[in-house]
Amino acid sequence: MTVWLRGDHLIRRSGPVARRPDEPVLLIESESFARKLPYHPHKLILLFSAMRHFRDNLRDDGRTVRYQQTETFEDGLAAHFEANPDDTLVTHRPQTESAQARLESLVAEAGGAVEFVADDRFLCAPSQFDEWRGDGRYRHEDFYRFMRRETGYLMADGDPVGGEWNYDDQNRETPPDGWTPPEPPQFEPDDVTEDVIEWVNSTFDGSYDERPYGGDWTDPEPFRWPVTRRQAVQALDHFVTNRLTEFGSYQDAMLEDEWAMSHSLLSTSLNLGLLGPAEVIERAITAYEDGDAPLNSVEGFIRQVLGWREFLRHVYRREMPSLAEANQLGANEALPDFYWNGDTDMACLSDVVDGVRERGYSHHIERLMILANFGLIYGVEPAQLNRWFHAGYVDAFHWVTTPNVVEMGLYGAGVFATKPYASSANYVDKMSDYCSGCPYYKTKTTGDGACPFNALYWDFLDRNEETLRSNHRMGLMYSHVDNKSDEELGEIRERAAEIREMATKGEL
Image 1 (cartoon, one colour):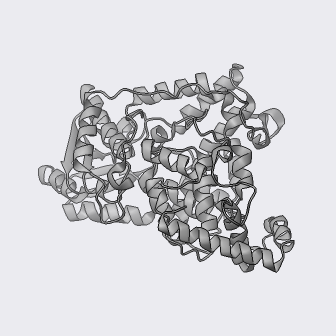
Image 2: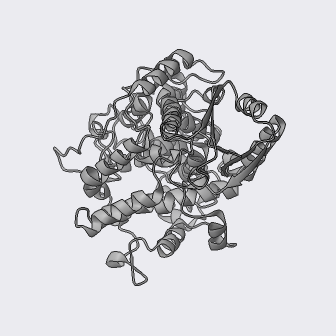
Image 3: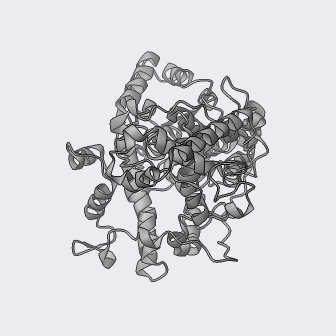
């Protein structure tokens, strides 16, 4: 029997690696995986460097590791079973039944068998979620409270610590002038990572059947992400010690010169298994109990890890494959080129897209309220924007992007989002400093120089009225639509059409 670890399951503290200490470990480094999409180079460097470091650390501890570097997973499995006939692999269960069936088929075709065990990167088991959900709607807030009760995190005698379940109303502040967050941690590449960087840069030049990522991947910043368990723990220590205190208050704010703000930057380590959700939650709670971090920051962070991350994993598990192609608003616009090349005069979009091109990252409000919001009101087909997110982000996997982008960002399915998260320039101006340096006018809806967010916002409400007006959460928005004359709505439609034409021509 052999423990088979896929590249996003680099866990040795629990799971089959820990429970089967005498069994060899198999990892397959597949080049074809890296060609499925025009992935950001940092995503490929992160994954392959983490896999190689994990291999080396296990070997240093005396563990037998069979490391296959092949063109495809099929080749890697074939080579393994040729050397180890009739072997049985033990691996973490993938997110969907169809993915599990695919792995079973690949292993069987290679001449072996496979057993699946629970995915230790999460706290809520599928059976636990299914029992909670029953036949009701998915409601994140209800699930989050359920998980707080189940785990006891930030609970006291059955009630939430502090008397409130969440402190979201305290987490929407903008920093004062002159505020600067602590510098995010940076991890210098060692020889293993340098070898991966050289291999990625020479092997994957950005030329794919689909649109290349930025033409030639641009010239990204130096690779900075943790690739080992030790580095991931250091990143967690840095966040709790230096950034958690102000994370809560400013977690929704955006500043042009501060890409990381006070965010944790732990998503890559959590999604690869280098950190576990329990340990990061418990570190944050300890900081609160020791008086080193305020409750609104700690609760807000826990809500992201214990609530949102776990919730989306199960929505994806239950709603695939239909979720990936959902498009309940019938959006059919092509993704504008500036998502790939950053070539737009819109200050917010230009800065956020450039950040993705440079480092494969932007924080959650930039993802939702800049990138997805624009795609929503512009009318981008959800699958196209999801594909871009999956390709562009260093922490992206399909289970992460699909519910976040297709459902939360573009209101594509209606399985848990109770309204579309659409906004005009007013939100961007309130939560950022982008508008002050933008050539577009935040207060204009039509005419030359009017901010595209404004006309597209009203046009979105107008063209989706039949679907959205009956939504009780959209009543206020449509009361404002009702106050607009036919002439004004006609000018808005004309401006929206002009914006789409400009975007198509690369002139926005």
